[in-house]
Length: 344
Ligand code: KG4
Ligand code: ZN
Image (cartoon, rainbow, N blue to C red; front, side, top):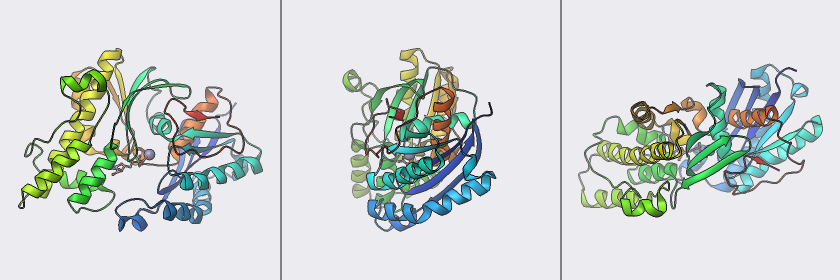
């Protein structure tokens, strides 16, 4: 049998994205973003995002089909992000996917956004060793996961107890008046700065914190420290603050991920999610994983931030692993545990 042709739809936040894969081969990855409509508010406005998804959906599906040179009737299965995310935004993608699956009489796979961030790695790298540790860092989530099987067996070892890593980047970018979304702007600004200029705190890394929060993250203390530093230092150097803040985040994320690898005896790490596009995180991960003899996988930056290819990739893996399809008429869910990769 030829490998399944899967169309994946992602609308959990401000990207309307459609990806098409055949097996593990990427054929199309088309994205429309409403980010500019949100920028003046300094964050994503759910109603604006939902309306933008509705306006973009049809043309993004058409463009993805054209790019991959396949007909809608050739599609073997439809995959869609069922959650977590903004529920009104998710509903647009889920409704489109339900309609497509019904009209084409093909199976529908409702996938977990978090698991699909990790699954996208399989489009560009060999099959990940099982099990693997995954550091998942995005605008809404920051977790360390033990992935035994990406379609059926994921356990969370730790997560943020306050802000997500991407959220911290976005908030600090706002304090520095860099714009939104902040991650890429801090990444760029930090290249001109001295990352050792300011020693910002590394949350939940003291031995007393490790008892209860060994693999958890906290970025609220760091945000407060940056804010206090800016107030107390009127002539601060923006690039130095960006670089020192970024270094604190990268240091904590990698300290804990590598510790998770060592303590579980798993010598493989995947870094995924929007923040995995960060150039400093990628560089330091390479160094530290080499030193610890851990095999490192990071999807290309364009596949780290939200996209439809990751949704199609997880749908395709679900089919090849023989997972049952989701029920037609599935609903969107604002929160789904990472331990449920495919939504029944
Ligand atoms: O995974 P994603 O596209 O959406 C969510 O699922 O949340 O992640 C978006 C987050 C944003 O907070 C954005 O600022 C951050 O990823 N991000 C970055 C970079 N590119 C995107 N953070 C740090 N450095 C980057 N280069
Ligand atoms: Zn995401």
